[in-house]
Amino acid sequence: MTPTTAARLWALDAPRMNIDAAHLVVGAEGTVSIPLPAFLIEHEQGLVLFDTGMSPLVCEDPALVFGDRPETAMIESNPEQRIDTQLGRLGYRPEDITHVVLSHTHSDHAGGLYLFPQAKFYIGPEEFRWARGTTNQTDHLFNPADLNDEVKEFDWHEVGPQGLDLFGDGAINVLHTPGHTPGELSSLVRLPSQNIVLTGDTVHLREGMEWDEVDPSDWDYDEARRSIAALKNLQETERAKVWISHDPRDWEDFGGPLKALE
Ligand SMILES: [Zn+2]
Image (spheres, rainbow, N blue to C red):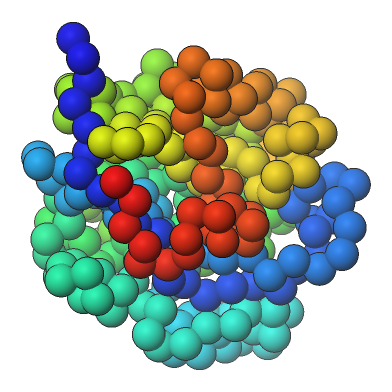
């Protein structure tokens, strides 16, 4: 069967964080200003979000979420970047979202989940159980409010290690790419004129791909390297372009926020 395609894909505008590149890829240097985006995919059977970015409160004022922690000074944001406002710019309301694929449970991806109670949610194997039992070392990457009791009661579906063809037509393939976290998910999105892989935090910067190098905060370094190899494989087998969510050069090359890709 020839796969059908999704209609289009956008990256939504989002806050940025100024961060030491060595915190994202072992051996990288300098400070980078990384976008923290969510992606919207239009498909004839639904309107899909890949990730939900940071809590909308961060767009109002980072201190509302991070208080006196260092992140408050590291984040640049404005209220226009709220995910609900961004959807509005494309003519959609939060209640129009039918499916949400969550790459993983960290606060720069899970902050907007609560806005979409009507949607079906997809999460990777073991991710929920792991997120509840994390160690002090990575605690700062979570915002407990993102996964509050109400959000936990949403319509969650755990994607198995074999991945999931979201609509059964080959257009949006959710892939298990563990390493950063146990349940890390990427998605291969087939569009009319190109295939794009949304990577979540499977890899953080281009240097990670070039050097097969991990993020020091990754959960399992061997798994992370295997998943980077899987992304490279998709570049070959699917002629897919890899969009590293947090790499500002990818953001630029794909046209930045609210640019429709078809
Ligand atoms: Zn992230």
